Length: 68
Ligand SMILES: [Zn+2]
Image (cartoon, rainbow, N blue to C red; front, side, top):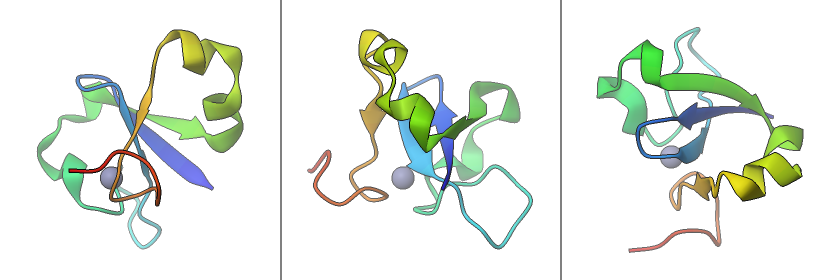
């Protein structure tokens, strides 16, 4: 699964499949500059460094995370 990290909010989203752009499945990154978003592998999210960086999962892209 391709993921994308928004560095300005430290939140990871699922990458949308139908475009080459780094746009989140939920559409959240549409207005974020490419400089602030980075591709991420799911394995990276499970790593210890991800824990240390306290990366959040988008509640709309990941069931069971985040919320309102
Ligand atoms: Zn999202």
